[in-house]
Length: 234
Image 1 (spheres, rainbow, N blue to C red):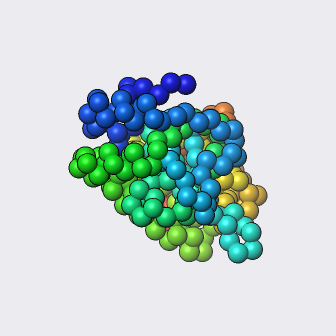
Image 2 (image 1 turned 90 degrees about the vertical axis):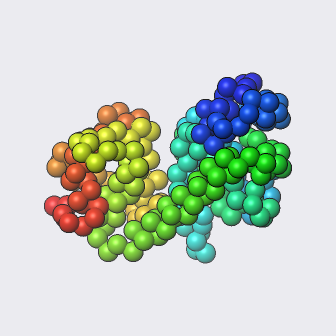
Image 3 (image 1 turned 120 degrees about the vertical axis):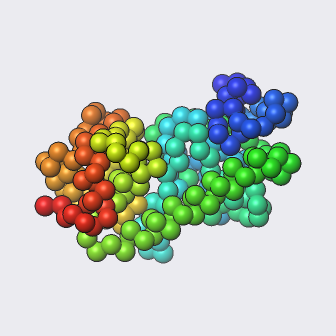
């Protein structure tokens, strides 16, 4: 796959860059394909590129002392990962793995660093995304403390759609939703526990599976109430 300026312009952070800069990035970037569960970035290693997700879904994960996998965040198409090294040059703090077959555009870290430091708008967008991820991680940590397991699962679902829906929107669709196992990893639960909660949500007409690639949130208002604790799942 050839990387072109038009392709790079599909990533919101790079859209503001001049054409000649995009051409320079395109000439030195590469497309990388990974199968499901492939490791895109390795924890503890000095990665030489920032990866922009063109197709598929990624997840940042870490491991506890006893070896349990812990999910930290998801990366959706148009987003990127490995950006912290742009600011401190330190090794990658967590693993980033492919949840589906993915295509990423790898841009050399040092080149991207030169470009964004010289382009205030690009720097602003990258900094805003870093801040957003920090807030996301804070929310993720907070929901792990919820004693009500069903509320924890509903909170996780709500976090997947909250930034994409309008206030009065009755329903929503999550494309390529995480599996029950992937949600369990995010919430420190067993897959069986997550499956039981989903079965109850489906029986209550709150969510509906539409094949393996779509999860329909049929009742957004109820999901929000279950997530904030004003209603309990029965």
